[in-house]
Structures are given as structure tokens and as C-alpha cells.
Length: 196
Image 1 (cartoon, rainbow, N blue to C red):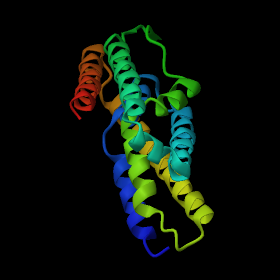
Image 2 (image 1 turned 135 degrees about the vertical axis):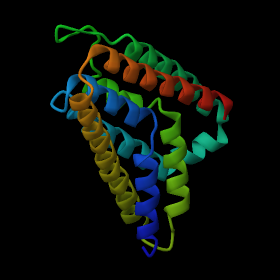
Image 3 (image 1 turned 120 degrees about the vertical axis):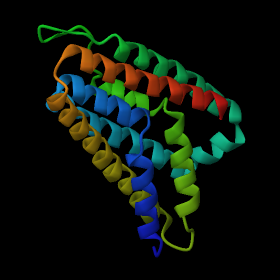
Image 4 (image 1 turned 60 degrees about the vertical axis):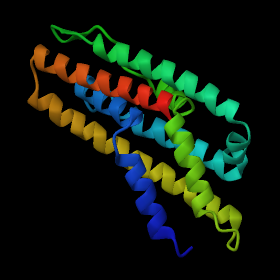
């Protein structure tokens, strides 16, 4: 596989750049700390790897052949992004009691399956980097593993960034402003998905 460096760079850039996954990871760490966010990278890695595997094995072709499936995924993804934006904007810190619950492992894992950006990314990755002159199953395993590893790294990076902000911005007003900003980024992402 002579294109391994390109695959790694492609996956890393797509995984580390801001998006719904990274926003939620940042939010969770920023508001609840690293210990209560540690499950997110694992959930995202499992979810993105599962989608990548499915796309390598033909789901990407099905999504291209039947655009109605993409539309349904977009609809549910947009609804969930707006729901998360609402939940993030409602976060209140009163005497160290959190009024908004954090996202759990299963919710974050399930979110991967409603994330239209991930399907587009996984489909293009499988099309661009599958070379049928090599061992197909080895390539699928490699592409899926790289997706999982770099998703794990990216989400972990955003969790640490959120925790750095947690230690800098301690008062409720500062935290509310950052949470409102994170909510707005999710709403903008939802609008971007509608327009594309």
C-alpha cells in the first residue's frame, strides 16, 4: 500500500478539524472534566470504525445509488444536532451541581450513525483508498483501523482542549458564553448540512 501516508494525512485532517463530534467532546470535557469524558473517544472510534467498515464493504455504493437514504440520515442528523445545541445552551452550573446531563457512551456511539459528515467522509475514504490490486480484506482492515485510531486521537485532543478551557474559565458567565458559542457552531453545522 504505497498510499498509506496519504491515507493517514487524509483521515487525520478530517478527524481533527472542527465538527459535531469534536464540539461535543470539547463541551463535555469543558463542563464535566476529563474523567467524565473519557468514554467519548472510545465510543467515537467504535462508531466511526463500524461505519468505515460498512462503507468499505459496500454501504458507500448503496448511499450513492439511493440518495433517499442520505436524505433520511441528514434529517435525523440535523434534528439531533439541533437537540444537542439546545442542551448545550441550557447548561447551568449552580454550586457545582450540573443541571444538564452529559452524553453517555451509547448516545455518542449512536450519534456516529446519524452524522452525515461521517458517512460522506467514510464513503470517500473507501473509494479513494481501496486499491483492488492488493489484498482487499487487508486494505479494509487497515483503512478501518486507521479511521478508528485517528478518531480516538482527535476526540482525545478535543477533550484535553476542553479541559484546558475548564481550568481557565471558571466563572458561570464565561462558561455560559463558551457554551453558547458551541451551541451556535452546532446550529451552523446543521444549516451547512441542509444547504449541501
